[in-house]
Length: 189
Image (cartoon, rainbow, N blue to C red):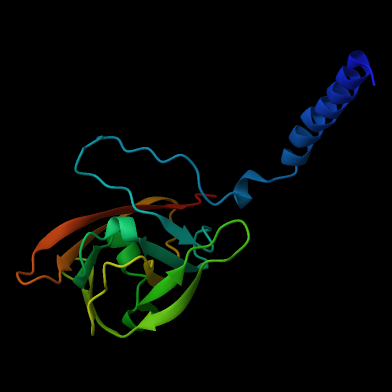
């Protein structure tokens, strides 16, 4: 085959894909996309963004929220985890609908799901709007991923809801420290 013939074939293949990809993307509804760009107004070195996943982001819908604590987020084992919840979201949380588990983080070919539930005592502090989680055995600092799972009904108002997490280390001297923050997005339509 001549060089010009090869160039023509490559150019035709390039055109097929260059025209096909935008056409295929046009069928994706922007409402079906689960994440977007996250803005932090006050960029602070102390702020640490944590990963999360939610099954439904429509207002007033039943939702399952996974607040991930990945290996890179945990420097030590954790005796206790506190989650500071926004006031308008806190009223939707019930103690029996909160748990912590070892999790499989989903992606292209697998879904996000709990693998092993971690037995824990869970308390809701209504004065401070916090969820206090006390696992019966400390969450180890191994390669496994863990998640705090909330089964809630979404708030009536759309917008951004920021959850802050604090942990207590499982060393000889337990020290409390900031783990990071999750910013959930609810649709406003």
